[in-house]
Image 1 (cartoon, helix red, strand yellow):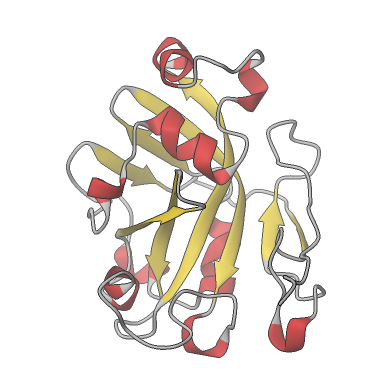
Image 2 (spheres, rainbow, N blue to C red):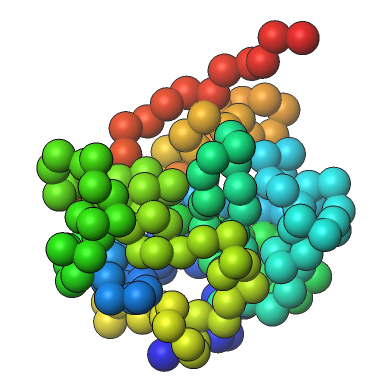
Length: 196
């Protein structure tokens, strides 16, 4: 269990608190090592930037729920909804270390050759945990997917989000947080402008 009021704060405040937290799902536990904050209406990189839609409605709901979405026509990614209800902020779960249920995670990620890569990247993490698009809106205080915050905060570093620009197209907003030196943290990839 966790105190929902801790997640009712802005995503930039919540994101570092999620480092070292455990996400338990369907026989696998992942210790979160990398996350990214998304600020809703004030953030062009956020799915909530242009307002509420059927796809992003969960982001506008109460904190402590999963917001899952399909990307690149093949991957599901997961976020934890943060902030006050109606603000559409959230934290993308980018990477983690599988600390329990390694055999189950390996079966789900059967092409992975090294355990360090089982949940290294947002799509890999959701696959390792058995999270699907059908889990969109799941309350992380109950059921078969639960969040347990770490008893003490982890040391962390911050830098630009991977593959996403910040305000005004800049890469230099430090909205990605990670545990320094952890081998499960995914490599940084600078954003690139799409050609018209």
